[in-house]
Image 1: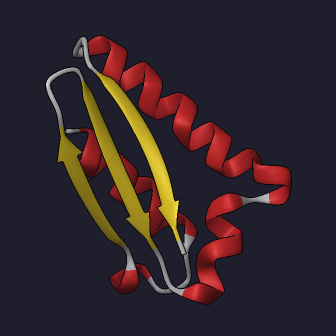
Image 2 (image 1 turned 45 degrees about the vertical axis):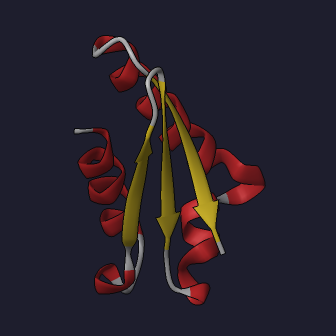
Image 3 (image 1 turned 30 degrees about the vertical axis):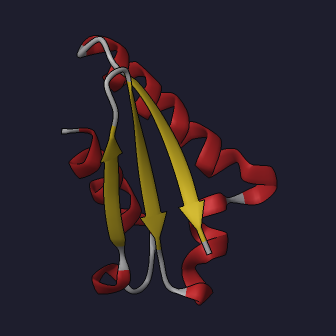
Length: 77
């Protein structure tokens, strides 16, 4: 569910949605979600002063709290 949420948000933001790759590393308490986008779309995902990335992390945190897990978003270059 969390992986799909991040993928949906990222595809809506970028110019090359087919280049969006999301992988999830699941642990007992914490999930790490890795987001990869095309080089030219990296700025769109991060946003000015990291605001877009911070907003994505906030939504991910709210969604993960609902299912009683902890999730971390990593944006990979």
